[in-house]
Length: 101
Length: 363
Image 1: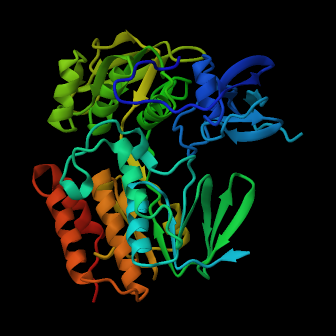
Image 2 (image 1 turned 90 degrees about the vertical axis):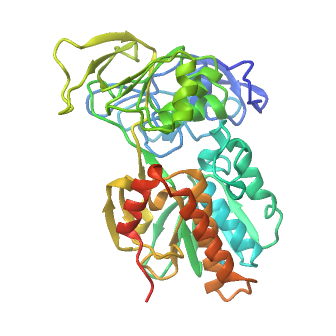
């Protein structure tokens, strides 16, 4: 959910664009991290862990912890908390270590 | 191609920007790299007004401070900065490598290096602490204050230090409810002014209380909390389930020290500073010649002191490069005095204790 009517902050947002998550069409703002757009759309599970197949979301949101690795445009292990969203991006949950295509 | 600036600064938070400002103004050819999408480090998410004195922008909201630090130097011909650039290595011959936008390897051979990489958020062990919805407090700040997205509807805050208190207040500013703040200590760790603000909003601060477990299958739907005794053990029968859709961990930070290790700086474990930190002299130079430290990377403190340490490192680097700085000794002394005044009094006790373990004196 987007925050509205913040007493101090005025959010600078890029233009509204479309991207897909697991084949489903979603909208977000250009240039914001993919993770922010997904969170706004209610997507919290970003990948499933390597050994125990557990659901994993983001944790640090500044590109340090590698919790949020996803497959973006066929590229695995993308830290979506610091990867800017672009028009038409194809985003998928990563399972395990991901595969190079 | 290898770039050979006089000064390379790693990290564009309060320490790195303050260092850049001094070095650039003194005429050093300076490059700053940062792994984030914008400069400012954690300043860009601090909606509260800062304390301290005018030198550290007291009364100014954190979100504006990065711009102030940058405004003097942004267009200087001897300054360049690269975003989305992660420093990845430091080699024996003084070469620093960095990865630009996950794609391109960059190489630098600076005459002086200032490492101002900041810190990592800590976590604590409890069942399901890996569930989506368990976030670092800084992550919640980033999501809501930088990108304007609510982390959830009802949060549980773990930790009543300054970060836990401030982020709880910021959650309320963003119209998100906070069910409670739990704190294992028997008292609030952060400043009273922050604790009072949050208490006035009706958010309970439960001391001697901890989280035992996060609940949920695919994401957080609640938590189990319990009272703890003086041996930090949960008290039987005090466990209770509370509802929340996210859990925010504000349980401390640890310095990001990988580059100091690569550069073989002498390190020392300083619990007051959150972990291992490099030894440094009063000019912020480590035991590796020409490598300086500033800010949380050298020990967890706060943004005001990080800015002064950064300025001190930037000034010292410029001086050691032979730049003409009017009144160098005097400016250095006044920065040191400013640091001392920030660290005085009972709240600075642990900082002074930590410094005693890692500041070495020049012969």
